[in-house]
Image 1 (cartoon, each protein chain N blue to C red):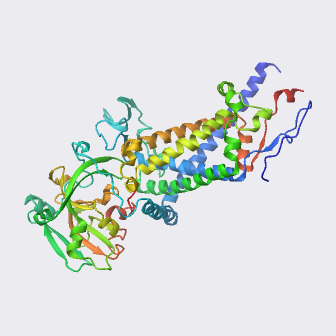
Image 2: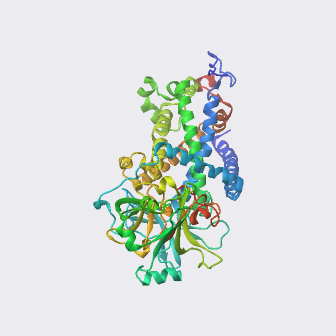
Image 3: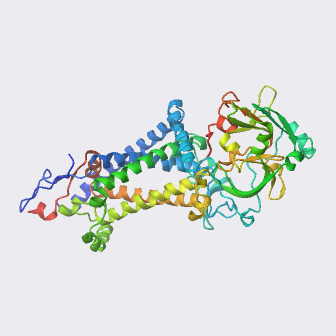
Amino acid sequence: MNGATMRSGHARREPSRRTALRTALASAGTLALAGCDRLSRNDTFVDVLKSAEHLSHAAHRAVAGRKAMAQEFTQADVAAHFKGNGTLVPGDADYQALMRGGFKDWKLEVAGLVEQPASFSLAELRAMPSRTQITRHDCVEGWSTIGKWKGVQLSHVLGLVKPLPSAKYVVFRCADSMDSLSTPTNDTRYYESVDLDDAYHVQTVLAYELNDQPLPVTNGAPLRVRIERQLGYKHAKYVMKIELVESYASIRDGHGGYWEDNGYEWYAGI
Amino acid sequence: MDMPAAISASSSASSSAASRRLYRHRLPVRVMHWINVVCLTILLMSGLTIFNAHPALYWGQGSTFDKPWVAITAVQGPNGPVGVTRIAGHQFTTDGVLGRSRVGDAAAPSVRAFPSWATIPGPQWLSMGRHWHFFFAWLFVINGIAYVSYAIFSGHLTRDLLPTRDEWRNIGRSIKDHLLFKHPTGAAARRYNVLQNLTYLVVIFGLLPLMVIAGMAMSPRLDAVFPGWIEWLGGRQSARTLHFLAASGLLLFVAVHLFEVLISGAWNQIRSMITGYYVVPADKREVRS
C-alpha cells in the first residue's frame, strides 16, 4: 500500500467518525440544556436546589455571628453618584402627593405585634439619636456602590413600640407599586422582611440622609432601610409602614418580600 | 481492589494488552472526579447567567460604572442593536454570540451578554441561575473537601500527584513532548506525567480555592466574618473579577484536559476514569520485536 492510498483510505474513515462524534456531542449537549430548563420548571427539583439557602444561612451564622459587622469605609471611598435601581419615582398617587409636599405630611407607621403602635414624622425621626455609616451597597445584579447613610437605628424605634414576645419578623411596607398600579383589591407594592437578628443589628438603620443630603427620591425618599449584611433588594425604599409579625407566610405570596415572591431568596446574605 | 497492580515483566517478546492492564484510578478518585465534572459544568453555566445580570467587571470595592475593564453589551447600529465586547478600552463586534443572540426559537435576537446555549437556565432568569449556582457550589465544596482529605490520607497526593525529583529534572523534555503531542509509553506511562501533575496541583490547590474564596468575598454576610478581609482580594468588585478570571482559567484547563484526553487514547483514558483500569501504551520497541 503506498502512502497515497493509505492517506485517502484514512481520509474517508476519519471525518465521518469525527462528524458522528461531534453530532453526538452536540445532540447530547442540546438535550442536556433542554433537560436543565425543564428541571428549572419542576417544583420538586427547585425545592431541592433552594434547600441550599438554609445551609448557607446556617453556615454564615456560624462564622459571622449575630453581631458581626459589615465593613465601614471612609469619606474618601464614597462614590460621587449613588446609582438608583428598581423604582426611581413611585407612580402611586398617595406618594406623589406626599412628594409634592416635601414629605411634611408623611408619617412612618409602626404597628403589628407591638405594645404601643405609633407613627413618626420625618422631623421626629430626625430628632432621635442617629447613626452615620459609610457602607457598601451590593446589588444582586452584581454591582456595588459606597454611600454615606444617616438615620435612626431600627432598634431604637423598636424600643419605643415594644414588640411582643410573639413578634419574630419585621416587615417593611413601601409606597411603590411594582408590576401594575396597586388597587384596593390588588396590592402590588414593594415589601420586605428581616428577622430579629438583623432588625436589632447596630447597622440596621432607617436612613433619611444619603451623602449628607436628604435622601433623594431615586434612592427611596423619605426613608429607606439599610440591612448591611444582605444584598440590596432587602434595603426597602419608600418605607411607609413597619409591621411586627409572627410569620410572613400569610402576607401576599408568603415568601417575605416582593422579590422573594418572584423567586429570589429570603436570606440574601449571598 | 486497593493497590495498583504491577505490570507483568516482559523481556524480548511484545507484551500483550492484558499484561499492560493497570489499575490506575481508585474508586474514590473516580467518583469524586465525575461529581466534579457535573458540578463545575453547572457552576460555569449558571455563573454565566449571574454574570449576565450585570455584564461588566471592575476592580476595587465599588463599581466604576463608566470604566469597567471588561463589558459585554450592545451598541446602536444602523439596523438595530449590535452585540459588542469591550476589553481594556478596545471594542470588538461579537454580535450573534456575545452581546446579542437568539434565544431558543425566538424570531428576533435578544440583547444579552452570554448566549442561551452557554447559560443555565437558557433564557435569562437570574433567581433560578442563583438557585442552581449555590446548590452546586455546596456540592462542589463538600466534594472538594472530601477529595483533598482523601488525597492526603490515602497517599494519593504524595504518591501520584507530587512530582519526583527525576520528573522535575526532566521537565524540559516533558514540555517538548507535550508540544510535539508525544505521549509516554511503557513504564513511563504508569504515572501521571510531570506537567499533568503540576497542572492538577495548580488547579486543585490554587485556582479552585481562589474561585471559592472570591465567591465567598461577594457575600455581604461573609464579608462580616472579619470586616475588611476582602481588601486582601482588592475589594468586592475585585473579588468578582477574580472569580470570573479563575473561572476562565478553569475553562482553559478543561479545554486542554479534554484535548489531551482525546489525543492520548480517548477511550482508554475515559474508560479508566470509569472502571479504574488503564491499558498502558506499549513501548514502540516491544511492539516491533
